[in-house]
Amino acid sequence: MTRTLTNEIITVAILGFEQQKRHIDSRISELKAMLSGGPSEAAATPEPRKRKRFSAATRRRMREAQRRRFAKLKSESEPPAPVATPAPPKPKRRITAAGMKRILAANKKRWAKVKAAKAPPATAKKAVPARKKAAAKKAAGPGPS
Image (cartoon, rainbow, N blue to C red; front, side):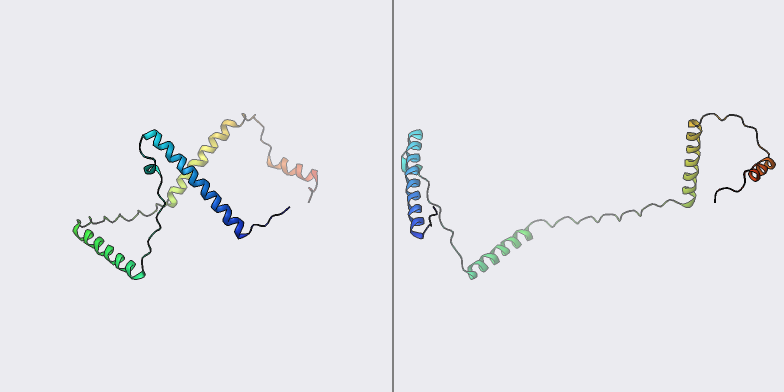
């Protein structure tokens, strides 16, 4: 069952909730009065005031007056210390060709030592003369192409 809320129902609901709020506020003020021993009226919270609206001309005058006050304060104060300009950043350093060659040579030397340390000791093999290598290739025939 759906009930439609009309303006009358909403208005009555608002009035009922405001009445409950006033009742609760009065009870709170009575309890605060019991705690402090003062009158209950002083403990009630006042209604918030609406903010006053100013015309455009009034706002303009207020703005100009504030600017004059700020300018006066600024002129009376000490002049600011000059801002030190930061030194320009150093140019990025580049490595020379000779320096790069030295680095590459050192890396090759280092990796050669690492590989030599990992490799097992080589067994002594007899050197095969070049003539025998050529004869072995002919006997094997043409390789897969």
